[in-house]
Image (tube, rainbow, N blue to C red; front, side):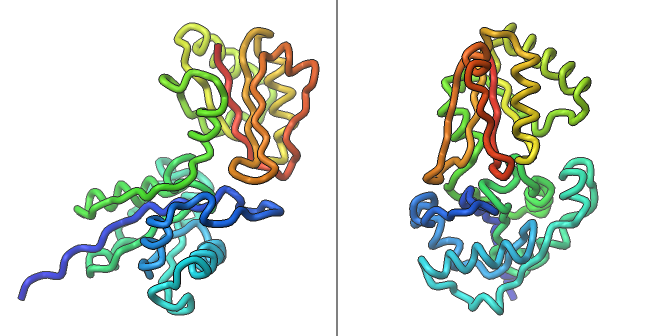
Length: 255
């Protein structure tokens, strides 16, 4: 008897409005092909089962789910992945993909944007490759790329840095080193911050960077309240308005 074909791992992007006061209509940020594919998947790996169900409810309003929500199989990423990140957490992610070995397609979700990019999930993708599964990224929003494209900074050469140090002295040292590298190479430096530290991060940037360095701050991306500001540090100092403490933001700077 021939073996059943292997399932695929789909990387399913989600809207960028997680925990935001307003939600953008799903068809404004996800193409119909992504919604259609997601509606046919009934095995999921997500950061959180509750947020995964909330996303599936939104999909169901646009395109009826193949399997009722109550019958969907949802697995959560291990807690260590959230705390330490995919590379540092270690562990074997292959057990999360056993359904694909039995022929079921699996969807990988983050709570906002593209899974495995500035969000957990790369260890699952790596495990899928090791198991010989096909990995298919679907089209949808990525906050990092949207911010970079809108910043006016160098989009041909850039680095995503994740989170910078919380300690003020360490952060200042790191920012100065990154700026020196950016001014020498032209490479845009992109990073994120926990929303409640937005104001502290902007203050640190304005205190550490040279006046001529260009700084972009992008928040509420894809939402009606979207704000994209890109100015020299000197101009920022005249109007140093940070995103609010509840809004995810992307910061970028360079020459």
